[in-house]
Length: 382
Image (cartoon, rainbow, N blue to C red):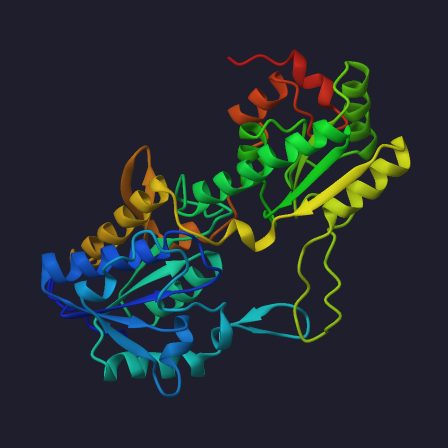
């Protein structure tokens, strides 16, 4: 397919906006900023594409968005356009690999041409931005906006929705803390974090957890129990744990939910209950587990996420209008820059094992359940 000729800089008359993947607090703030910037600063028309990229297939589902249509959106969670995961734009082969069916892209691009959409602002995580990169390869000018509450997209220091999720988890820890102390229990909070432990690490420190288990540091249950027993010996008869859903024991496997339905892909979940059972078996101590699940995604974005999402949305329009495409807006040292989408989706941004936050957690007595935990006490920051 021949690459589409780009309009002259600043001459995009109509742009589309797509929200894809899981919802996150701040999505509506991005939509609002895109509409207000495109219409107010550039005189462009904005079409909202509903139900993610699926709205570009078959009978298209789009709606014109004017400033009046986004009034009051700033504090609202979710997305007014609806969202889906990758849908018909990614297929899985029997061996588990992914392919991108050309027919879906050709149909979507033909519909974009029919709708006279000059370029797209695409808001999403790794999967959604992978589709965005493919759209750009097919000649559709695209600027991506990073969205994942896991904060695991490469190329940006923070993604919107992450800080709101931290507030939810920290409040849950505060509430569980009083119950744990009252009953001398071990309380385990399982949080999101498939491949990375950003939510567990940050909220665990903010909420005063004694044990934090993250995917980046495979743990030993003996070390976890050692921390629980040590607290019992020092007159703290309770312990607080935060466990990322993707955490696993050394030489162990990821734990998945039993959905009882082969039509759906397996979902992570259950590591918190596994730890609960093992701790009770090994210590005889009463242990409870709470899974926050989608509570971390919902609700109104807090102030920082509203600001960051607004900044991302406005800067995405500016980048598109200035002739950039195939890029994602990103936060770097308080500045919004653009990075190639290919760079943002090239790898998952994991918690560095030598990060300052992990060192700080260990300095204040937090256990990560690592067999070599004691060796960290002798390390110095240079």
